[in-house]
Length: 179
Image (cartoon, rainbow, N blue to C red; front, side, top):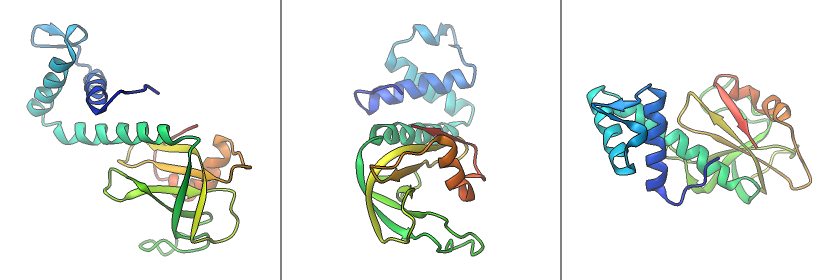
């Protein structure tokens, strides 16, 4: 994962990546790779405006920023407020039962405007809150928000174990598990 100095550097990187994703290698007469950062940002803006891709760019940017923030939290200890304890039902989908504790981290707002969502693994009873280490980021490639995975310090999980524990909800998305 690239380490960015600030949000501007991130937006320039995302602008270049978005243009590559859309196979835009030149704009008008100039090659994208030869443009300075300020020009690339402007070109990406113009390209999105001309092709009605502004909403797509915003979602792409939000997803990538969320991924970047999650990666910065890997290995850090956070406090999770549990709003869907193990064994509880989803508030809207009553047939969905949570096989793990699920909650949020109040220290970071996610792209959906809510606090960052978190799965808690390695705790086998319903809890109201939990303090543990961020061990993975579930990056959703087809949604605006990612999920973090937190566990007690003494536990470790493989990507396969994380997917198995979160599959009840993540099976509906195209995901990658970052550790």
